[in-house]
Length: 107
Image 1 (tube, rainbow, N blue to C red):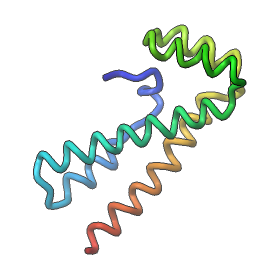
Image 2: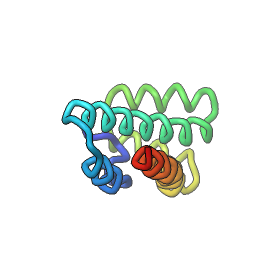
Image 3: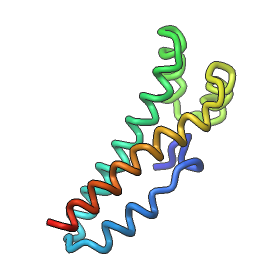
Image 4: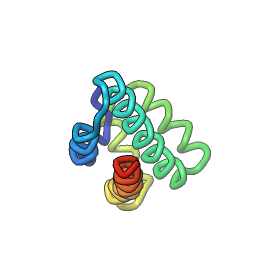
């Protein structure tokens, strides 16, 4: 599923690390879904923490409609440097995920 922020975030480096681990296809798929979900929640948290209560409702409505243009127009009007904040939230999480995967490889 293409998310409104997909063009800003790459997860290939994490997927490559998963591919290097001795995991079944089912396990890799499960972990990939968990990673996607974690990134999604991290991005939403970063955005929602910047919005007022009323703006949160509007944003969630746009998100449910899936209109990416409307989402970006709204966010760019309400959140200063929104793309940078989304990238930072995702990058911070990816750093933690890479650490976790390296730790898991050791065990």
